[in-house]
Image (cartoon, rainbow, N blue to C red; front, top):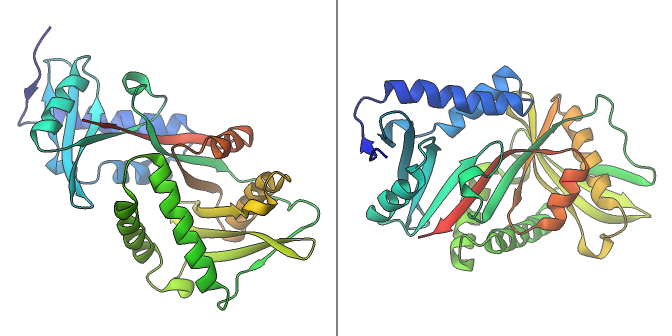
Length: 283
């Protein structure tokens, strides 16, 4: 078995890496513009990655700062012994946790807990809202209350996924909301909805049109706890498809945190395929 050695000339590896990533996204049903936009996101910071080879296969790693802590990332892995080498390398850089982005199954990382998934599906051409359910825009007066509830739910999701402490999750939440909603309710490209049934607001939605080429991203499609178990979860997914088409997009995408098996089961049953899966391991 050949030992892993860090390489300076990464041209041969990079061409293969980019083609592997594109192939994974194409296989998931992405259009070519979307696949290339996702590749750009997956390769962010690529010039700072460290690449090693055993002579025939590859491993690419890096370390970033997240909430004041060093986090190791395995960006690519084709070498059979590459995982153990990557974990040792990350630990040697001071990382206490290592993360990996996967397409097409867990493979060598089946024992890594799931931190989150990106899911996607082409929206129906003429999605219909379920009988008895109406959708309206959230009002600006309702926005502060919605924001407080959304932030609390987001923090709880992050903590349940198991990767961050409550304090770190709050810091991440503050950063993410400021990043995505710099103008709050009036942020361009974002739309907020209230779902109503029997004269009551039973849930809310938050989407970002044009998030990627042809994609509406569903930041939140939330059914209030007291209304769950009544079939509204599936109705919320239909609302997401309807909102996607309202925004002129063809594909709906969203993230689900690890540990939320109920939601994952719903997404499986409604045809939202796993596009990316993010897993992590404490070192």
